[in-house]
Image (cartoon, rainbow, N blue to C red; front, top):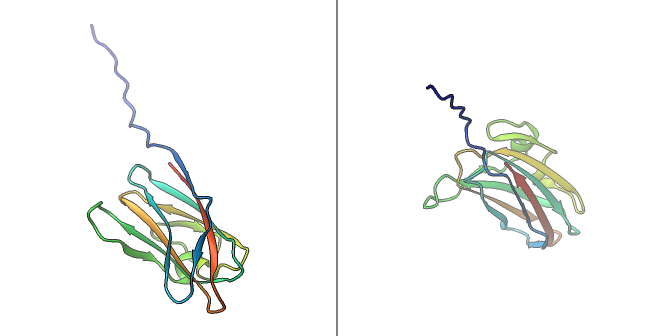
Amino acid sequence: MVQEVHSSPPRRLAFVAKTDAAVTIGTGANTDIFDLDVSQIARLALEIRNAGAQAFDAFAVLGKVSPDGAFVTLLSVAADYTSPAGIVVDASGDLTILGAGATGWLILDVLGFNRIKLQASANVAGATSASIFAGGA
């Protein structure tokens, strides 16, 4: 007797990761504002809320491909967000100058990465804060 077997590829794990606490972002140097294990997902959606009174003057996405590897800068200039290419599926606009009280978003293809980290700095007028919300599958 022949038995028919159907096989389908395993589904990637779906998740929702969220950080409610606003992270204080200083001026002059990038501050780590979010770090997430993305080893079990292919696509990551991020909502970035600048909850403070100052605009960003830098916003960077860093990634590493191995738990033992080092983070490398993947995205850091305006064109990375305004002209999506490579791992950037789409973005709300230039996140490097996200205004005070504004919300931006970013969708990334993260297949092959182990971790993704976000960094930002505030403009010279003073510190700001941000909350990051993320989801992916």
